[in-house]
Amino acid sequence: MTERPNARIMGIVNVTPDSFSDGGRYFDPARAIEHGLELFAEGADIVDVGGESTRPGAVPVPEAEELRRVLPVVEALAPYGVVSIDTVKPAVARAALQAGATIVNDVSGRLGLVAAEVGAVWIAMHSQGDPQTMQANPTYGDVVGEVSAWLGERRDEGRALGVREVWLDPGIGFGKTLAHNLALIAHLRQIKALGAPVVIGVSRKSMLAELSRAEPALPPLEREEQSLAAAIWAIEHGADVVRVHRVRPIRDYLRLAAAMEEAAREWA
Ligand code: HH2
Image (cartoon, rainbow, N blue to C red; front, side, top):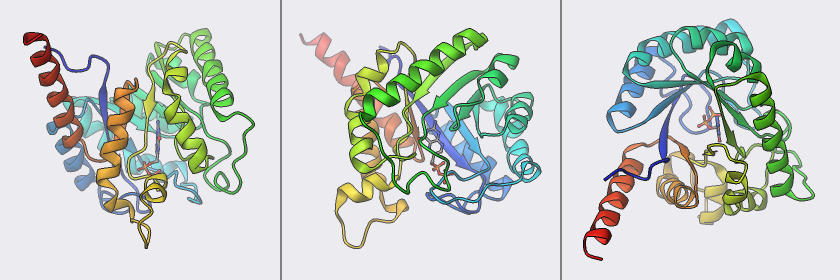
């Protein structure tokens, strides 16, 4: 019995001092590598390595510094599984792909050509504005229609460039209010109808704190249950890849779901 055939788990390794979710914990390359290996051992299908925070208001990192952060980590992890590079810089993407990464996780939606050049998968993520300004006043007429249309254009662009595979991500929290995020997650099927694998990243994001209504607001490291619930909801509604900080509970869920389905068939 296979697990949900398309559901893949992408575990996050932030080699940054300032990520909103776990800033500083894995800034030391040795700790980042150790954490990536743990995520593979817990059942991650992909480990996503990033050296520049994209949290609202984050300050851009110089290229040389980003390379210094991510390259040793990508190189060390690549022999153990599929590694993606989370960057918006073409030179960082190229170097990481040379060091063994096979997926460009691109929150700018502009790196299709780099992915095409080296035969990598391109994750094109939607964002309204850049991290400095994106949460100032996100505005859409029809958020699901506009984001789907933009993702459809990236799918077509990827095909025209000869990209091996394009995966699409609506970019939860990237220039979006809570209502925008909820509308996009609720209409995953519309995004899936574009015919490409869909990636969803909700893990520890502020929309979860908003929804929990706890006072004071839950800090990122205390959003685990909400993160798990959101990832499961996304998987059940068609997400092909969930980008998460904690891998084990999602792997447990996928195993449980597979066992339930097998039992349902046996006892039908
Ligand atoms: N979210 C973040 C970063 N990269 N990539 C994709 N494809 N989808 C996402 O939703 C996404 C992403 C933000 O999360 P995190 O890496 O935990 O924090 P930071 O940006 O502060 O490093």
